Image (cartoon, rainbow, N blue to C red; front, side):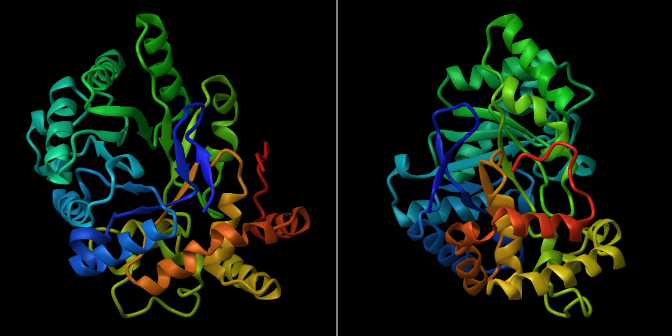
Length: 331
């Protein structure tokens, strides 16, 4: 496992990390979640990603129990949470149980600490921008949590470059600590934000990125090229129908078919190709893996050592297949 700085910070994060979205407390049994975390940790993964909304808080409870049972030194791993949706989601939460106002940010942090059974969060993300809360209030709330020792770094998730820069402008104006990292979706089929929109802010504020959905919710594994498998997959989870509409298209499946042929040529699996491709972007701090089986995780962790197989010539071939070469490539 190799480690990368989280943006301009001095924090070293494993280039592959493990996330719990859709799996912990929902799709998989707790013993499987424990085995996944143990395997990841033993392979050098030091970052475990979570959020208040994942399985309505149950994901953090499961992860917290595992961390307690494993007894790993607290200074050997990084754990995160996210705030915005509330534990019950935007629709079912009351006005004070959601958003990025000072009250919810503060209470969400305390609740995450309790569920995860830790004294502080390494990373705390604003899960989405909040149009109803002044950015000054959000930046102050996050800064205060840092000064109180309850979080170490704060960041954003699915914010625009403009919104991130607004947060930094407020931080600069009031001499506060601004966001260190952004958690955007990034994969072969979803590239613009990471490769084009954020180009300048990597340089200006030293933005770190903890990317999610590197396999495009499973499409880049190749398993959907024939049909959607009947077993429990992300495309079959209730409430995620939007994944099918936005990503599971004939055009994307045709690209995956060509990419599979390319992966066979260099003797790696399709998931390993997709993950290695993401790792070859120098502005990616860590690639968050999601897994429901040990065999999946074991396969995907090998991308860390296989990424060197993707030489410039191969990367060019991939760009031709994808047909959407970025205007400002960061590879």
